Length: 290
Image 1 (cartoon, rainbow, N blue to C red):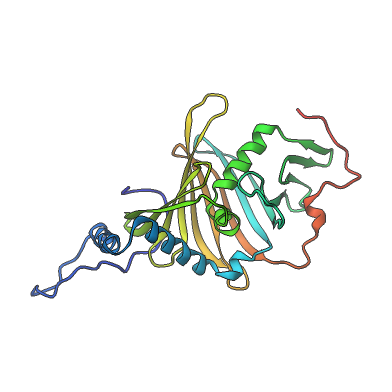
Image 2 (image 1 turned 90 degrees about the vertical axis):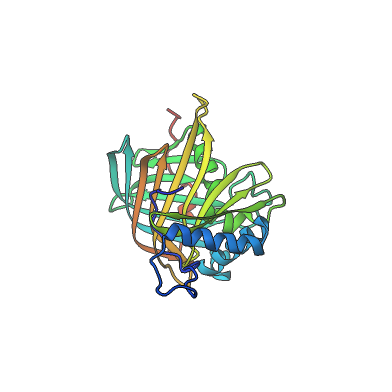
């Protein structure tokens, strides 16, 4: 996997042994990563190595502060694309609340999400654990079931959601696929496979330990084609309390960019975040599905 759109940090491992040379020759980062990977594989099983990489990632993301994150607010601009052409852009504020008390996190979402758009946040989308609504000044219209199903499937495959919510589930297989170099930068590759055989392949930066790329596959409900869903994570910053979060996220499908968000601020654990954001107002007009 030699060239993939991602931004990570150069590995410091496997710099080569020149003790028997008269001078130290430049080394290829791919050879360095391979050497480091070979050394680790001799010392660890794929399961042990995968578990270690995941645990290092959780600690880098904030440890207990990340695992106990209750809510998050991402503010910035979002862009949508079709066939590499820009089709939409907006100021956006994405509110996420993690829900406790959900027993079957493998099949029911343990979060609510509200995506508000525009300077006045006067329209957007509400995702609950079971359905989704398009909200405008006209009222609230239920989104098609397949739209919510795609959102739920994407969330269940998301590496941050897996680390924050799902790793307690029985039946997980966490397996290292070794080391590689992407755009001259070293990464650790780990497959995360749940009891339903859903697999997310995650690329972790050798130095920062952060996820920089994830890949999963989904069958199109209509055409039955297999789609490759790739997400890139960059520009990590402290979102509060030591929790690290990517301020730039890009999603690609079958090699074409479809979505991008650039956050100007990300805040976690806002005690003043109103629960009203995550329910439909009782007075709102309910519109018929389209």
